Length: 295
Image (cartoon, rainbow, N blue to C red; front, side):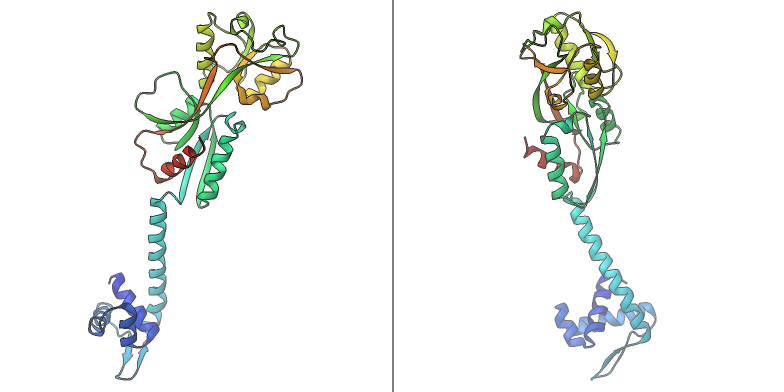
């Protein structure tokens, strides 16, 4: 039995007329009759009672009609689903993002536009520091990730698409000696207690700030560690030190905290969209294609 036999059978069962069924199927009546006979032979039962003037379903034929319609409908559904999957319109896409990236308007816009364009794709969003996102990409736990540009070479493992370049800024208490300066001389932060991410947290911002300060001739004295940018800002308000963070965090309005630009053109960070190199997933391709229209 094949789908062709079932389609032929359903056409005859619905028309109860071989000539009309043959015309509907676009085939001759003799091949249609042969197809029905072959199906009946395979099933070992008559499906139609037929005379020169009358065609009627037998009881087994009535039972087969219900099943045949369901089989053909499921087959068509499978074809449509497969074609949509090949276009990246259905399935699950796992997206990583840093804690601060939703503060950049472009990231929510990309996610919202993708959700609207592909409503049948289930989006799973996971917050992770940049370096941990790259590890999650490498072992297949996420499919794409919004990451800060890593300073450590990643070899050929990933493909990166630039989303946005933004400044790094000084975060100070409003009574700090440098709070009135704008820009703040980076070298003036030497010797200041820093509130910053732990070395093992996996954020690229840590790497970038350490390299930036090294170029200015000093290593930050990290007096207090915190894993969240919001906590860092809160601890600065409490007088525990200073920090250097991406500029979009200016939006975090905390009483007693000011944000100041730095005096070096090298004080910037780049947000990237990353995926595995050679990725063939239509879902990833659709997401990255859409994202590139926003940058």
